[in-house]
Image 1 (cartoon, helix red, strand yellow):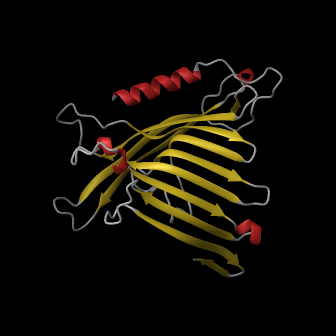
Image 2 (tube, one colour):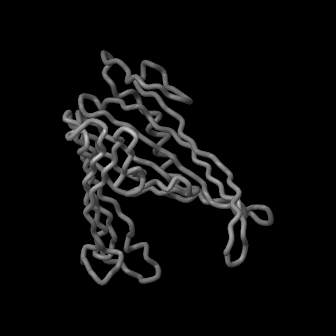
Image 3 (tube, one colour):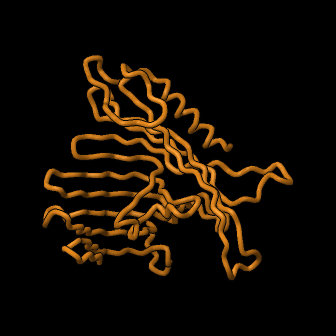
Length: 254
């Protein structure tokens, strides 16, 4: 277990040991949870998160071999939302995972690496949420941005995301995530921040403003290098519209 994971585990355990942050006259946040719950007077409940599988795959046209067994083991905790004194509500999610394919340990002392699939803090105000940390994102039935759940490792992002939800039915998400940190590029030796690769997005869901049952999404996405070298294929941008609706026997998606 590397230093970052040990620090994250210690931080999570420290948070769980904190005294309750809700006022005595407030009711605990109600939530249906699975797993371990704290005492009702604490005002915070914990829900166990997990995903486990081992899957045999038989494929053709592999260079060396044609089959393997892939696995995933995720297990973590999330809290229900609890109030920070008189401020916003806070929610914590901690979900590490080990993922890969069968091949380690039998003739040596190697073991799968433990990584972090999700680990973030979420602050909630009326009509708005702020997420900071590592989180999964899914937009457009996972066709625009997806978690790639069929893959053993899956996809998640490091960054921040703000989610707005209005009484009219409009939903608007804005996110900034870091895809490539220049200081971690051992091949090029790059150390300047203008070679960091960012993934930015604005995603709006407008369907409820038009008619109930319509999914109308308008979005703008960009992978940004601060220097914006158009010769670099990693830097690009797109604007898109997505439609989905059921009309009687007709079900369409564009």
